[in-house]
Image 1 (cartoon, rainbow over the protein chains, first blue to last red):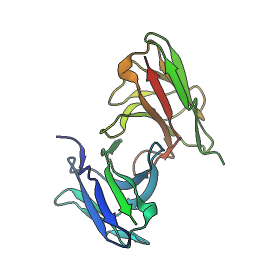
Image 2: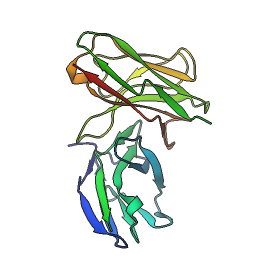
Image 3: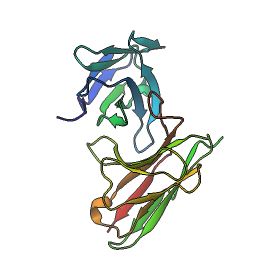
Length: 107
Length: 113
């Protein structure tokens, strides 16, 4: 089993829609979690950290479910500029990256 | 503030050639990392360093060597390039390991013919 697994998508959504996707992780002792965003052929950039109580940053909401070992990302009121690949990252003694979920927002 | 800078941006090599990729960071970060990213796969850790003069193997270290002679620089070497090493290579740095996000360079696209 991979350490971090993501639905690769793609999720094709119209502007203004809400899109949500999950990421599962295998190590129950994992301590910290992040969502990164990666645009085509560019470097990954930190989108947000994921806290145990859940957290929100503008239109983005991240949730952590330790019992089921998954984290989620929800994007509200999607913009064209949200089109990207979203990487789930789990940190125990090292960062483990998911392969990414591709989101395409269409006009 | 440049952040993390990788050189070169692109390179084409022939099988058996050697080369060194340079990563430099100006954030005074202790930890530095080299990853490779291949289509359909997540970033895979090649080697990392927890401080000047230290290096450690990651998930896919074979065929690569690294050095961290100065805190701000982390070099990745390919002694004898193979087509399987065709990939996009990313360097990253962080203040510490646990709980700290990583800052990435903009990548080196390497093709081995």
